[in-house]
Figure 1 (cartoon, rainbow, N blue to C red):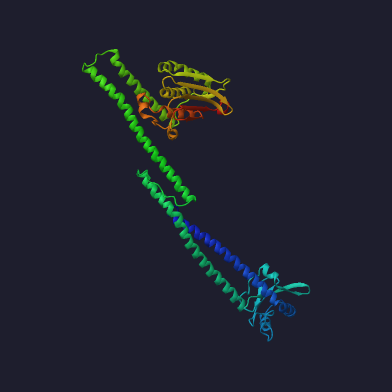
Figure 2: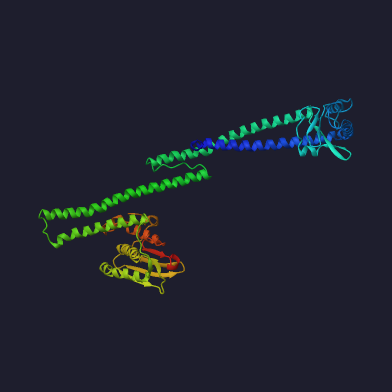
Length: 459
């Protein structure tokens, strides 16, 4: 039942229990301490009288062979004129102090207040008593107990502790209520914000009014909401980009097929070529989307083995030489020897390099160059693809590996890019335990670097 109670109720109950234990414990300790010290004081004040009374009680025990009817002797002693008055005697300021007589087992046989007869005295009380001995043997114990004045004083202390505890508990609960409201109210704000975010209001943010844990929670919530908002915008952009990428080739295919059906174009190889080209583009887009979905879900299959990264790089670069020549771009590769092996999927790593080289050649100007370098150090093996294209603005760099993000949308579309190559490359590199980064200065080109752990480090 308490499990489903509001948080403010749980906090108040926890605080009330804490106050009860703390105040009750303090009150108990104070009560015991006051009682102990009061008993010690009474025992010390009546010690002379008990010492003088002990021989009379010993004689009584000898004469009566026990403690029968000893109450009369104790009462007469307490009520004797001149005795039991004044500090240091039987009581305080004319108030009588009770005398308690116990037998050799510590059981009370006589008590001037008639409150303790038959009770068993504790060891701590017996240590404050005056032993009564007959022929060297202890036959009883004489103890001074609290009289009316002492008992009244102790009762006053108990009442004060009770009222002080109730007052402290009430103040603590009031302060606790204020504290719980201070803690719970921001949580309610975050709760309401979560409902609004869940309802689709992704632009809503929680006010951050403090720098404590609650403020940190609000800040983290806002960061989460911003990430959700960004992902939602990215999803919408992705859907729009997918629709655009699909619409363009489908429009070309439809127009070309209708022209062939209507007899506008003859059914020749040249007139079928645009249909084939656009079909290839559609297939590449679908395959890229599939690879990206599998990579983001962590389900992209990898055939891991010892891979010679230098050899994979040279093979991929060799496949781009003709394309680079057609565009008038100088393509070169430099491999630092020796190169340690890396553990990975050679085909997937070749796919990463293919995406990077395609991207570099797309942006390299006519007469420009694309340089590939492979080297190794203590951190692992590295591949850098550098072009001398227009470069990338600094504000674009953090988003370059996002799905369908285009630093230059018009040029990317005209050149046939799907906007997925860099996203796929990042996911593939991360699946190999590596990292990919980019450095660029506008007007001076860009450099993409892939870093992979050595085979022994990855294994």
